[in-house]
Length: 247
Image (cartoon, rainbow, N blue to C red; front, side):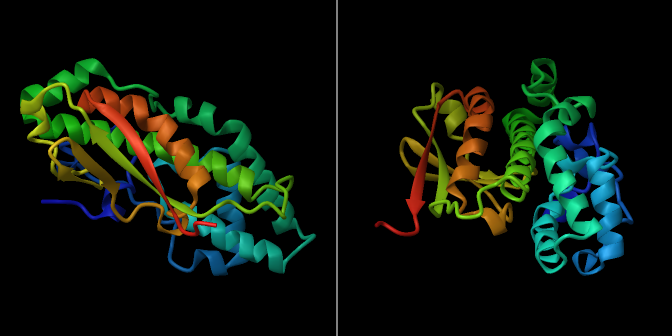
């Protein structure tokens, strides 16, 4: 049974790395409720928890869009305790995200022993699922740092990022037999589609919809996950940016 994106990413380490995680009990956090961005009291509790590192951010992707909505609350409530807490939280994302990523047991590289175990028990699909899961959590780390910068107090308000959609491609696979099995939808929320005899497109479905045209953020994500992609596909990894405006 395939998982919804919400089920897939409301989890805690180490279940998130397992390609067999549909058999496990998922973590449900009662603090994160619909409409939280409209309730300053509840929003305050969440920001305090994020600032102090009490939340495993890396498996809570809903926070991406919530923080965007919190920024709206800040604009409506300037020079308040909530506003100051928001900016302190953004600074903590810039300063502490990397260390908290490691503290919670996340790794920057794949565990080769576990990768071999995936191949042995689940074949290439399980191995690719493991790698794509891992890449997505690496991406989450980059997203939180970027949000901390963009929504932070010292970010230049006049700065405008050129809107562009980044697409990741796999080309020149070393082993044709393996490449024949690239296509498909994976537990990590990714879809791989063959575009021609020597090229496959990778898409993370329902991921970063509020930021899909943010070319600067996706460039950071790409640079972070490229080594993982090169390892799991044993191929060349590249990107193409589809600019929204050509001028």
